[in-house]
Amino acid sequence: MSGAADPLGARLRTYEGRAAVVGGVGKDPVNSPMIRHWCEAMGDTGAAYRGPDATAPPTMLQVWTMGGLSGHDGRTGAYDELLALLDESGCTSVVATDCEQEYLRPLRPGDQVTFGAVIESVSGRKSTKLGTGYFVTTRMDVRAGGDLVGTHRFRILKYAPAARETRARRPRPVVNRDNAGFWAGVAAHRLLVQRCTDCGTPRHPWLPGCNACGYLDWDTVEASGEGTVYSYVVMHHPPSTAFSEPGPATEPEPEPGQGTGSPYAVGLIELAEGVRMVSNVVGVPPDKVRIGLPVRVEFRTYEDALVLPVFRVVGGEG
Ligand code: ZN
Image (cartoon, rainbow, N blue to C red; front, side, top):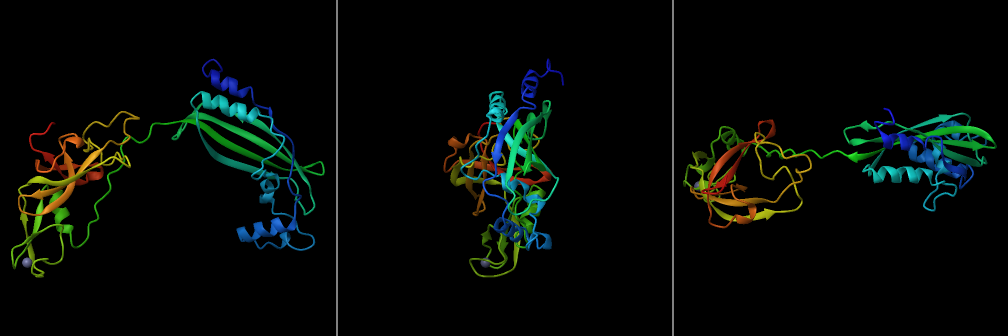
């Protein structure tokens, strides 16, 4: 991409080749205890890493250059300046993307490591699933006794986060042998209430036996779908687009950035048949839901053909 089309990228690339760390010195010489701990943690029983002629595992390269909590001297500030420029441009998020190492000769206990780092490259502006930004690669050259023993390339993506998924997937109901008949009814847009065939008591949620008489046999009655709000809560936190209005997948999605989840009402609905059922109350803003409001069932289809009953306030809006 040309500098004219991407002035920020052109400016960022002026940092290519600039030193990020000069004259770094390893905090400890290469040593047997750290090698032993590493091998134990990795489960590496290689004979080359033990005994009087032990070498350090090559993949320990970065161990010898880590600054620990107290950090390192020798940082030039160039890398921080580069990141600050990206922050100012809106590329406020960062993710490490990959690391490449090259090993030129083995390190041995007693080797004192020195190192320097350079900002090797800055990519053009890239669009990724995470967002749009720039890949920044730094290269650390690790030396011992004047020899280059390895290089360590570390790449990050510094980016402006893309808008989040506009709507989260609605959680699926847990369907089991006891309640499968209820959900089969819902899929067919029928609200089925279990009824004891001995004493005639209706029940919901579905259960294997009658709470009133203990009898196990049952049949169903199709509810009229009429009911009233027996009780309710309005959920504010955590915000979830999976439950917020508008619910159906058939309605337009919110604009990017708008799908952050808004409050929604969960009601305990008393059906005309005398049982109570938990579901969403829709058709009025959540803060207008009241105990005693008349409601009527509505079957909504969500993503992946999920059908759920919700209750719409009779005479409510929309
Ligand atoms: Zn019964």
